[in-house]
Image (cartoon, rainbow, N blue to C red; front, side):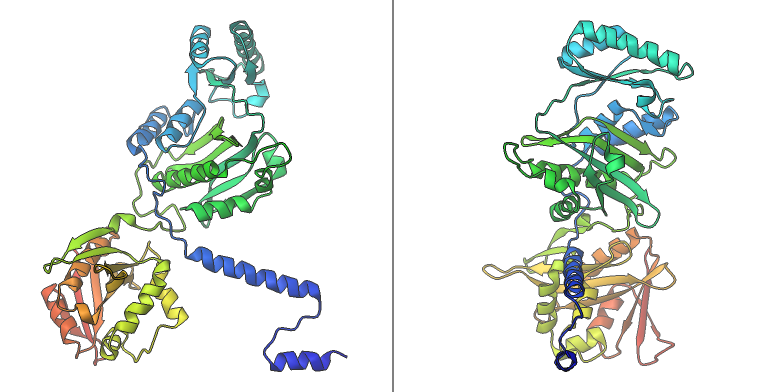
Length: 478
């Protein structure tokens, strides 16, 4: 009878399981929870590779497709689009006659591959529209003629625009992978990664991640696929240079963030080996009715870290402040900031006696939904000292969706130096950018410094109807 042992475990607040399997399952759930909590701390910006993309060229490609009445980019356009973001893609040219195809082939160098270009044929396999490993001009002449004749016979209704000409990518130990972008009904744009090649739809080995990605999130995305095991070295086969795969995923993430009109995309195959990786085929679908940029990232479930709000401010005293949005990894700095506040300052800020931040409060203060709210921190690093938060200003939406409520707190040692004014001016700019028309706040009547600041910033005062002991302040955001 194990009942006494179970009772003892329960009294000692220890978990007791009826089988090893349930214990392992519970441990696995805890591990997944821990990993999920760690991933919550990852807040990548929209641009992480360090090389700004060529957005003007990308937009021009979309406009050309729109003008032609197309929602699908051809492969040459896709190659140019990927080049705007530094995504490696095989050289791709369009030949519209036998003579042009021969000229392109000589410039590229044999062996080459040619693919039919027709916007009326969804699947080239229907007309055997791909010819690979063409190694001479004579073979190219025959293959090109046969391809055009075969298309006219099998699909006489289809308009043939020409053929795509590419070098034949031959990698002895290349692994065929797939990188895709889709549009989820709930989560908006998602990034897919998995096994590629002609059997990718049958194998169904892919994992889905939410952009924006950073290197850790990209690595975690790759690890959730069976294809990840194929990237490792095996006997005489060298392992894949995985950093190049991660680089490509990061650049695809940047593409998703910057171009809301990309609604579907698949790079397949994406060939990787020990020397790097390269894409050789792609399908890109655009929303040609809406090509405007979206600075608010409404097409994504997770708003990227707003790196454009980072700036350096020079105070009247000569000190330098680094102003930026708060990040989850700032939790330790936030705790230290609150701990340094006097009891009165904490009471003025939280309207209650606060001895320290609970885990729930800390998560709420540092894990910010950048789409709807914002917390700006002012960081100062004196010579030879560790960086610390000296001020925080934040806003969150009110129920009406048109106004937001703010709060501001300054380190007691840094009061009366103009930090609150600097933070509030930056907060006004950010709130206007999110289309809020009004900013409100609630202040204790004995908080003289806050009421004085509110007056300087053109806030109006009124009594709180729900609690006459509080002062309501508000100002418009023209």
